[in-house]
Image 1 (cartoon, rainbow, N blue to C red):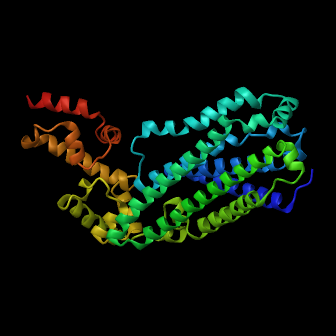
Image 2: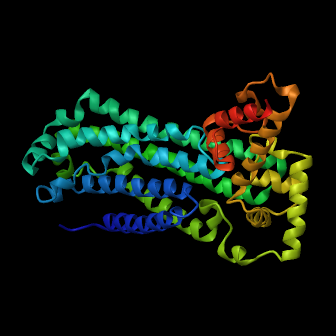
Image 3: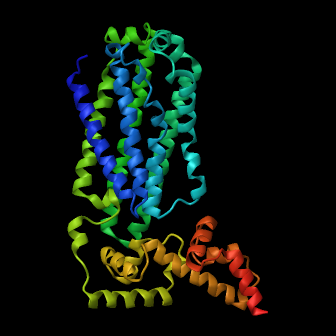
Length: 388
């Protein structure tokens, strides 16, 4: 089996992106768990493209490597949800309903199960027979399913871009240029992914046209594929991947959610850190910015006049893991103050939770138990007993 120049370029791109995904996985095993979503995004994307590469060489691969067919097909349902979940987690600190996160992976698991039951365990001869039968890929259910897959992916990309747009509006209000530039780059990543999806859909339409002219093996052997859309897909994927790698090296804070290594080595002096800490705690007590549910690190940086990088260091000196841990600690304290206020005794727990700055009941329960060692219901019950 020989490989053309385009095959070599795509294969080398897949290898490099895979190595980058492994690096992100190692980083994500620490405290930056959102990087696991990013790693899964890249891994699922390269596995899906590897599946397309195998399909492109199906005539040369048959029958020796027929077992490789459609191995990466389910991952076409995985990379867009992972892209969305990464953006939500990295830019908003948490997913609004964490218990619902597994639901995003149901289409991927369903297709994997279906292919396991109907295709993966078939021998090479049976797979070849299926591929020679135009009805295997030309039936209306398959076509509509593929359209649904593309629509689902575009839907998740749109949700991700919408989350970035909301974050951009907050940054525009406060004029924080560094995070604005990071979000602008991630927006380009989302647009690039949308273009990749569009090219993939056009390639699918082209493949259907090839099938109408005499079956997939015949269409490959006669040169119907690759066509302009398929070549455009692979070339764009290679360029898109190298664009990601280049910008990950040039602007690591955009993907990794942190400043570059040179900036990280700069540490505040004890005197400056203590001054910033006093200023920060004073503003938190007096102006109570934590009551704003959409408060971000950049918002607090603009409010205090402390640079974001320095603010993160000061927060760590307050014995908090990160910005959200710090803000939520004040929200829990605020909630407890509300409970002690007789004028608010008629309010429900849910109302007080929102007033304290939380926008998710599940997050509130988790944070409250972490900070107090008890869930809200038990805490209120014990407090009521002690007051009697």
